[in-house]
Structure formats: C-alpha cells, structure tokens
Image 1 (cartoon, rainbow, N blue to C red):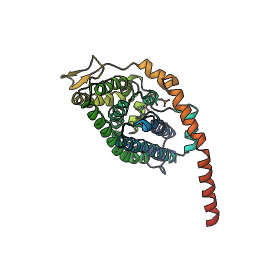
Image 2 (cartoon, rainbow, N blue to C red):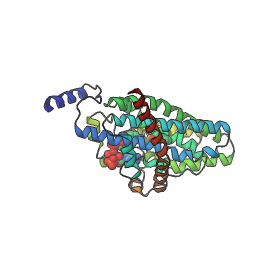
Image 3 (spheres, protein in one colour):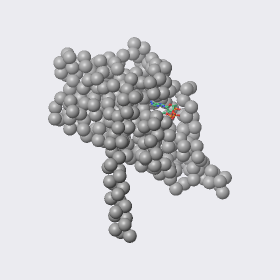
Image 4 (cartoon, rainbow, N blue to C red):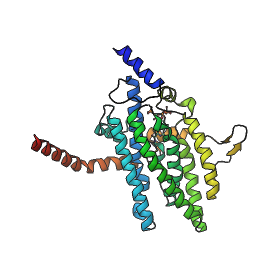
Length: 310
Ligand code: FAQ
C-alpha cells in the first residue's frame, strides 16, 4: 500500500541510494524532476544558438571544427536529458511544446547576445565553468537516469570549458585589440554567469525540498561561491579583470567576497524580457516547424518496419 511504498522511498533516499523509473515516488518528486530536467534539456538546446551564431564566422578551420564539435555535444546533451525526463512519464514532443509556448523555462544565460568571437571563449570559460560547478553534484542526484546522464555530460562540459580557456589564452597572448575583446566579453558575461546558479537561497522556493530529496546537493548560494572561488585565480592567470570592485579575499571566511548580481535583471530575464528571449524562442519554433517533415518521415519509416515485421 501507499504508506509502505512511501516508507520504502524515504528509506532509499535516507540510504543515499538511487530511485529508478520503476520505483514508486511521490508525485511532487516526479514533478520537480520533470521541471528541472526539462529546463536543463531546453537550456542545452537553446544554448546551441548563441555559439551557433559564430560557426560560419569562425576565424580558422581549426576554430570552426572545435566550435562545431561543442555545439553538437550540446544537442547530444539535450537529447540525453529529454530521454531522462521521458522515464518520468512525459514525452519530448510535449516538453518541446511547453518550451516554445513559453510554459517551461531555460537558463537565463542564453538570453544574452554573442557579440564577438571572444564570447565563444568566455562562454566556454565562464558559462561552462558555472555549468560544471552546478552539474558535478548532480552526478549524485537521487534519481538514477538523471545522475547517470550527468556523468557523461560533465565529462564533455570539462572539454568545453578547456576549449574556451585555451581560446582565451591564445587571445590574451595576441594583440592589444584581442586582449580588449576578451576583457569586454568578460565584462558582459560575468554577472549573467553568477545568475545561472539561481536566486539567492532566501528567495529560492525549490532548494530546501530538492535538498531533502537528494535532487540538489548544495544550495544556489553555496555553488555560486564555489564558482567565484574557482574563477578568480583563472582570471588572474589570463590577466583579465572581473568587473566587480567588491571582489576580495576574505581570510576569515576562507572565500572571496563578491557583489550580488542585479536580481531585478534576473527576474526580468526569466520572465521573458531579456535581450534575446523573443529571438531565441522564435528560432527554436522555426527549427521545430521546419523539422516536422523529418519527424513524419521517421514515423512513417518506423511504421513500415513494424508492419513488415508483423
Ligand atoms: N535561469 O527555486 P529555484 C547548460 C528558476 S548549463 C532560468 O532556485 P531550482 C550547459 C527555477 O527554474 C544551464 N530560470 O529553482 C551549456 C524556478 O522556476 P520554476 C542549465 C531559473 O530548480 C553551456 C525559479 O527560478 N543547467 O545548459 C534560473 O531549485 C554552454 C526558482 O528557482 C541546468 O539547468 C536560471 N538561471 O534551482 C549549454 C542545471 N535559476 O521552474 C550550452 C540543472 C532558477 O519554479 C552552452 N538545474 N530559475 O518556474 C538546476 O540545478 C536548478 O534547476 C537551478 C535552479 C539551480 C538552475
């Protein structure tokens, strides 16, 4: 009965073991996982756009090959994550509909424009850096399919972060104009990168319950701090200044102090009014509509084969 099933669920969580799709789970647990995994999948898919913008303008064949590989990985991550969400009883088509009708979110970071090639490097360094910080703990998420997807995704994110850092290293060792491009891009992406971790803990309705369930392992503020601590020495190594006059080492806390990002801007971006929200969704909608014939053809092919086998 339900009480015994709930007790079994609680015991599995308490023992830090995995919940699998066949297991009983509270409806709210299922709901929050669908919400988070779908949002994560959508982010990977929408996240192809800002960098995809530069594939045809890459400065060399080598840079183009690297960028193509990275953007293709993001498509793969999206597919992986949609498949993980499907084990919870939803389907990809339904999730895609919710994305393009604006009912489900995707990460705020992808609503900012990419204005120069340095952005490709800075996205790899800061955005993938933040993504890794946030996602490594998700490899220990209590829901098996999500945790396992995260292991592979994190390995690829590490490659993405390194490619960004390597591009920036090449640029900062180049001309003054290239160094200025890197600094200008860092100035634009620093604050939005901090916002990727979500609202401050006091303003985060989901954190507490998600931590109790072992979906999240750290709070938004803990991970944001970890990201700042990790990034400051990398900025120093690059010779880039992070655009926060309040950034300083706090020996007592053993962490860097930093200024809070503009949370009003964050709210405006996640409610649809960021600089590129409309463009990103319109592009996604267009791609979905233009791909309808591929889905129909795949369906017809699958049906034909099913008939032949029967
Ligand atoms: N953007 O109560 P919380 C990538 C929403 S990395 C938009 O704190 P939660 C790799 C939140 O959904 C980016 N919305 O929520 C890549 C909730 O709204 P709802 C993707 C945000 O879930 C790199 C409300 O605010 N990574 O794609 C954001 O406990 C380069 C209240 O917030 C993931 O999705 C935000 N930044 O914590 C690809 C990681 N923050 O749903 C291409 C998995 C919060 O109630 C290129 N997700 N919201 O309407 C998570 O770890 C969590 O969901 C958080 C939010 C930490 C994002």
